Amino acid sequence: MSGRERILGRVRRALADVPPDDPPYETAVARDYLRTHGERTTERTVELLAENLTDYRAIVHRCAAPEVPGLVTRLLAEHGSREVLVPPGLPAKWTAATDAVRVADRAEHTPHRLDRVDSVVTGCAVAIAETGTLVLDGSPDQGRRRVSLVPDHHICVVRVPDQVVSSVPQALERLDPTRPLTWISGPSATSDIELDRVEGVHGPRLLEVILLG
Image (tube, rainbow, N blue to C red; front, side, top):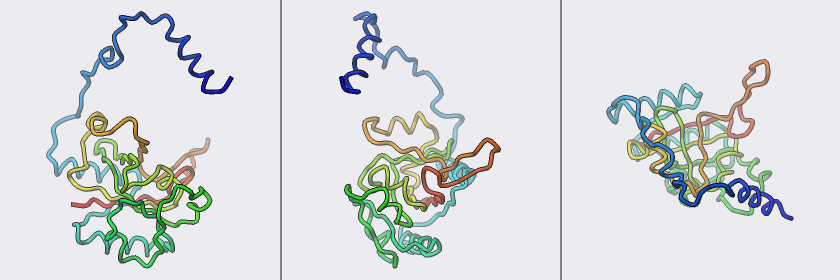
């Protein structure tokens, strides 16, 4: 018996006593919780996002569309990046001016190959102001999940205000649950029993967010 068959068998046994007229999950679970905490202007929502990103030790930059190539080039140079990973749908002009070698995201790349890449530049699906969270969903400008988890330096471009929402419920309304979602709140970090913080354990050590608008 395979692992899949075992799991499905356990699911069937767990559901054996569920009556046929049992209400479906979508209606059985109440959805009357708050969708936002207070009213905010668009400008205040973006400010809250920047504050919470910074609180999570991400580095926040702001620029207009024509300034993105120059800013990305500067950030890669300051990091000393020799190679930068580029998802297939990322606007080419964002990385056109850099001297770093642009590495295309390919399915055959192993984690060891990705580990040799210094930086990655991605877009995002949505950014949540109340939690300072970026969500990637594997769209062409974001690439596969591991491209944002293996390289040590992640530059994420957020289109403001279109991709910014106040709360998690608002973000969930925009996201497709069948897609590979990656939720990012600051650089990867963990703490040992003595509460010594270590960054870069299971994701990038340095997260830089460009608020484009």
